[in-house]
Every structure is written in C-alpha cells, then in structure tokens.
Amino acid sequence: EDQVTQSPEALRLQEGESSSLNCSYTVSGLRGLFWYRQDPGKGPEFLFTLYSAGEEKEKERLKATLTKKESFLHITAPKPEDSATYLCAVESGGSYIPTFGRGTSLIVHP
Amino acid sequence: NAGVTQTPKFQVLKTGQSMTLQCAQDMNHEYMSWYRQDPGMGLRLIHYSVGAGITDQGEVPNGYNVSRSTTEDFPLRLLSAAPSQTSVYFCASRKQGEGTEAFFGQGTRLTVV
Image 1: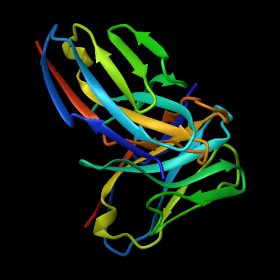
Image 2: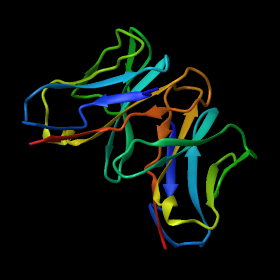
Image 3: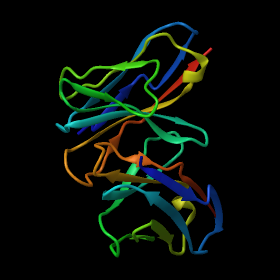
C-alpha cells in the first residue's frame, strides 16, 4: 500500500524567508510524484510531476526535488500570494490513481 | 474550455436522504475519480474509473455508488446520507499515462444534518 507523509502540517513564514516542505513516501515502483497547490475553497491545481531520483523542476519561486525516499518543495523568497496548502501525491505501478498526503498549510506574512 | 465541472457547489441533506453529485469533464480524459476532503485528513479516494463502463473502489467507498456510462460524466450517489458524510467532495480527471496531471473540479461542500 502506497503511503505519503507530509511535514510540517503547518508553516508560517515572513515574506522573503525561504524554507522547504517535505514529502516522504513508500511505494512499490514509483511512476510519478506530484505536487499540487490548493487555495481555500478551491480544487487542487497541478504544479509538478517528478519521475526519478535526482530530478528537479522549477516554477517561479518553487523548486521541487526528488530522492528515492522523499521529495522537497523549496520556496525561495516567498510572497503572501504563495500562501496555500501544498499537497504531495504518488502514483505507483500498482495503481491508476495517485495517493495523496495530508498537505502542508503555508502562510506567508507580509 | 470548461475543464471539470461539479454541481452543486453547496448542499444540505437530512440524514437518510439520497442525492447525486454531478461531475463532467470536456477533455476526453480516460481516468476520473472522486475524493473527499476532511480537515486534517487530506484527499481520500472514494471511487474511480479508468474508462466508460469500468469503475472500482478506493479507500473509503462505503455509502457511495458510482457509474460511468460515458467518457464525460462520472456521478457520485449517496445512498442514505449520514452525518459522517459531511465533507467537501472533489472530482478529478486525468489522461491515461504515467505522471499525467489531474484536473480537479471546484468541489461540493456537503452538510448532512
């Protein structure tokens, strides 16, 4: 059974204070690790897919990295508009639908 | 391009009532799924479909039914609503293939009293 654990559950940052969110996973045969962003009252929105250890992807102030056991979402010089819940999910060889973690709620104060 | 459309956005039911949450996508995606999201619990998979006529259970299927008669539509039926089914429900669709992104609807906030 696929397992995804995200930490911390909540994170408060000052504007410009860089940090990282963690997603540790246990799967049999990783086919893809996903990061999504969810704003209050809305559905999740896709950010990245990572496929293999060592892969990195960037989008604006966000950078996602992947190892064989975990993924990090690095946020560089965050702005208040980066405040959201960030969800991690994994797709394995034994499933058609990704398994999601519980998310990290990020608040960036101006 | 509408993407994934869920209706209704809000619903209040009395215990024991039944209802159907609607989900439609216009992207010709093969995979569709229903999740519920509760505080501190993340997204939990209820049912999913890999194509018209094919459905399967997820992590928390009890009390819910689905069918997939067309590629576009994937309704979720609550058979006899219970207060434990109070939640926010999300429908998602994605194209078949490894690592393809999922597109989510805006959600249905359901309260069972």
